[in-house]
Image (tube, rainbow, N blue to C red):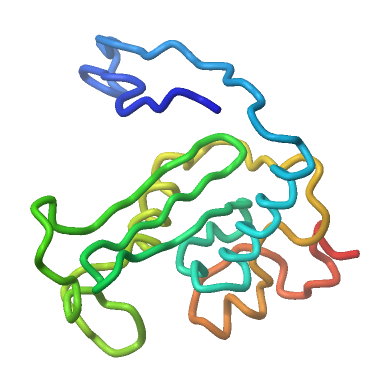
Length: 173
């Protein structure tokens, strides 16, 4: 369990010689609140959602990611909560006042169903930008593949930098 932080750092003149950090949130260590084996198994399931399931649009190519997508009854809300070993991010689309549906507003597949990208795609775009240049870390203690299979990614039209041959992947057994 880690206390959520909305803004980690505010920088003025970023990447300039006169760059100045105006605010930086101190790191949080967190605490173990569920049994480690339960957490590991839940994490494996959420990795599977990104590598083989409905959350495949949230995959980060060679960077391991896990998460869970969801919608509310009558499609009033849509969200994706995902994480890498370094960062957790939640994306929600909906109407704060409720009562309106997202039906017809989300572009969920090959055909253009609406003007909005689903939360999984927003998560992917954000995480790729914010983690650019950061080292790729693996989840500890996880059995099996942690990233999308390059052949599956190609069949879904998802670009990947992973090896074309799954047998040469570091996750291959």
